[in-house]
Amino acid sequence: MSKYRVQPFDLSDVNTYPLKKRTSKVSVDNFCRPHEKGSGVSEFLGNLPDILGARNLKQLAHAIVNARSNGRAIIWGIGGHVVKTGLSPILIDLMDRGLISSLAMNGSCIVHDFEIAVAGSTSEDVDEQLKSGAFGMAEETGKGINLAIREGVADDLGIGESLGRYLEDLKPAYSRYSLLLQAYLRNIPVTVHVTIGADVVHNHPDVLPAAIGEGSHRDFRLLARLMAEMNGGGVYLNCGSAVTLPEVFLKCVALLRNSGRQLRDFTTANLDFIQHYRPTENVVKRPVQSGGRGIAVTGHHEILIPLLAAWLVELSPDTGIE
Image (cartoon, rainbow, N blue to C red):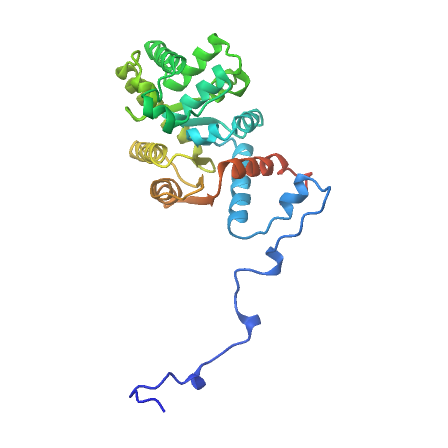
């Protein structure tokens, strides 16, 4: 017999109830169905479970398609990792389908996109290049990007439009893979948001910091104007920017509301392999507190974005996907 003065809780007074009377979050109706050999993408997507991440991705796809149908803005904010994982052809296809109304990029994104356009390759070995002091010192990258910004800003352009115009004139060998150029050719606005000193082109002898600052601020104001079209059903996606774009996005929200513009009832999403603090707070939570929905989907861009794009392509009345 135990020597303790206090005895274990007596369970005889516990009240129970029938399981069928309880509200449950998951049922077999939400379960997946196994993939059958030879079936198509539509069947695969329709077979995904209607639970957690898969449900979030489906809801995001519906929000994007509805935004297109209602003429609301669909803004994709992307970091360099999206380009480095080979996803530019998918995004260009979504431009043609009316599923991207504008792009917002951080500084690393333009570096990788520019290198893809002119060389068909990007992403140097930082560890090795840093040892010799060669990291970030590619001549064409630094010279071309800085020249494009300098010339464009002199003509009252933002950085995104400046680079698109420069690449159109340059006619690079791999132009079909460049988001900057292909968006420019389609009259789809691209805004670029730079943290001075964070990108390799800021080390180059041809850098003109005043032009970078002016161009980036012009693009900040352009993004705010584009975001005004999200009111009442638009979508903003943050893909692969942990700090810069979430901060810029939140400041644009504040600018619009401070100026008396309505910005509510829209959808925001963060797609990344880690849910960082700033995307969570500044994209998914804070902007939609007064009306809207925030969605977080965790996973690798090279899997999530093609999966989302496939859902967008297949999401039409004749596919049977709901």
